[in-house]
Length: 599
Image 1 (cartoon, rainbow, N blue to C red):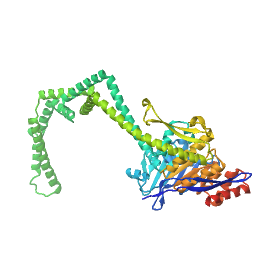
Image 2 (image 1 turned 90 degrees about the vertical axis):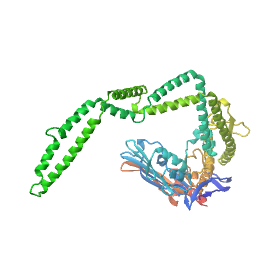
Image 3 (image 1 turned 180 degrees about the horizontal axis):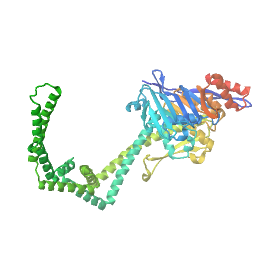
Image 4 (image 1 turned 60 degrees about the horizontal axis):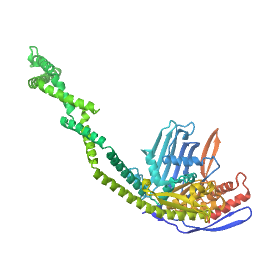
């Protein structure tokens, strides 16, 4: 059994310095990150990412560990290459620009460790792709544009990479806040937070089934004359095919019989001609072989070659006798039957004519009969408008029941999400922001495959002011932090072992960035978090730190990824704090930040 980790009520002391004074702020925040992270001491996680000839990366291998892994580097160093390579292993679309210039192909592989009771392992087992407690996703792209995917060494379609990837890793992008401007994405967020995706899909399937049957009923009600005409045509066509009553393989058999009957006189004449040569003529083969055998029989020698020739003559006589018997039987039994020939040709003609009418091969007429009969039965069944109306009503009732269940759960999860996002916003120094999830019932004519409600995020930017749609109120900076709060809320509910955050801390700094770093570290301590960041306050919170750089060698640019030692990490944090010029003060500040994180 996997070990279910759960941490509640973590108290963190967060502080930051300014040029004038030092501030100490005490924050309390709840972490409810439930994920099956360990089995027999083995954590579920991304353990290795290998990249070869991808973009400017010639040969890169990154060994990840559990906890929070930080990726940093100067702008343009190649952080996007690492995430791009990871996305490629997970089935993202590929193009030839991803192949390093001058190389034939690019290769990316990602190794994940799994628990045997995880959804990912079960999916691999269901598809006969499991290989112990690991999953290796590999992708190869050629310079000509061909792409191949592999799971545990076995070729697979890209959709398989995408499907298994959904069980293994969840990537939160720095641009996700832009999606919040689209109201339709708010429903997706609530369903993801409440883990309602399965029920949501059932509702959509139920809605489509109801509407499809309703469309059929409407068409029948408005096109009765057309349907009746089609039924009459189908009835006539089915009767024609049933009357000829062709059996499977009959056309081929008739064509063979027709060939024999139409060439009867020629066949018999040639059979008699061959019979004369074999045994019935004056100088026939049987007589000549008999004479040849007599010439060799009784000779005063036991020569092997003569004995062999005599034996072959004897065998030839037997073969000639059997051939003659076969020819006599054929000539005696073959019936020159003009009436049968006419009957065969008439039946074949009828089959050919029907095949032309239905635009198929004569041998396919039996299948065509089955197809038309089924269509006629379906139309006859649909003609029962009363029964069809009842079926539509039943399908609608099933959809309404599922949609009401979904609506109830959405309301419940929406209230929980409101509270969680509000808590995160308070931590992110947005105490005056009110966040709300508005669910309103749709009029019956507007209900759709998504359910019975309209769902939208509302915010109140100042206390006492009414909440308004997020897309109309929030500024760019506010939208970025609201998005981060939502992502953290969803991540804390996630059952996916590896979470990736790609510069989600854009637009924040100082103490707020410190808080974000602590939130990500807390998530990572319960599973695995990979974070790309430019913020020193976030980077200092990592359990391990990777530095991405690029350098030129032999007039060729290469990207590399190195795991930093404690000393190297101090200098990287100092660089992130102070820019190009690193002073003793920034180094001391970096050491202090790292020391506090270790404590």
